[in-house]
Length: 298
Image 1 (cartoon, rainbow, N blue to C red):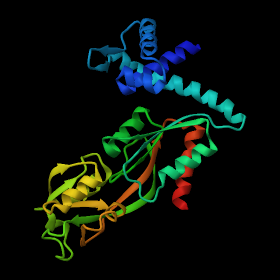
Image 2 (tube, helix red, strand yellow):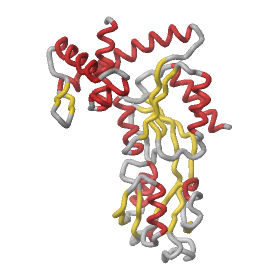
Image 3 (spheres, helix red, strand yellow):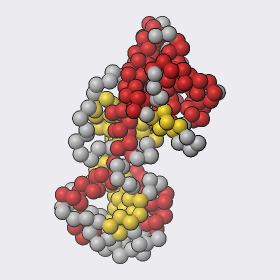
Image 4 (spheres, one colour):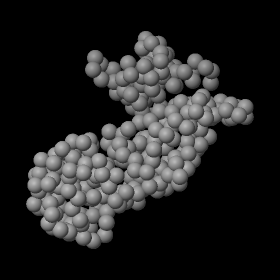
């Protein structure tokens, strides 16, 4: 496969992931017309349209969807060969794509990334925050669009993943100072069935832990408000009519809120390191994962 063909596949994958030619061209640092020309040339070679385009949307065709796994595998093999040569010369090269979450208790992600970049300046690291929480990171891992992820699992992880817990944080029940639970003493989860909650959407790690705990007791709760922004959650709790469980490390940021003791087993939320069980990782990805583990140990 010559350089032009590899470049075509790279452009195809960028557009397939972003479903937007403008965003893909920015990521590739190539003018949009160059991306469009390469895609048209690739479509002529394979004899089928790969994308459906209109004035507002870009979608993969059936042919484009069928081409994705092979394109990813071909580019991964080419990059692995290139990186192997560079590693023989004592340098790590390539790109690492990491899926992460909004909150990482016990992990200083900025410090880890800074250290990794200083030691491996030729490696490009792309950190992606999933808009659908852990479920989004799992989907990206299984689809092969990220190398590894920091995610939270309340249940057994899906088949096809390697998962190891890095840190854990207890979930704390918070209410406003004027809420009826403020100063009321310890409560059981069953006593919260009639309360109104604000929580993250389904698919987020903390939500899964709490939902599972309520499901095991055979009770449900009212969640009319969903948001992924902890500051908004705290502001809503402060108003006095909703409550929520937040990680202890997050709850500490809002001393004006009241922590309500909960009887029974505490609820724990974990941050885990997850990767594909079937797709080998580059040397750069393995080194970055090792530094994340080391940061937790220290």
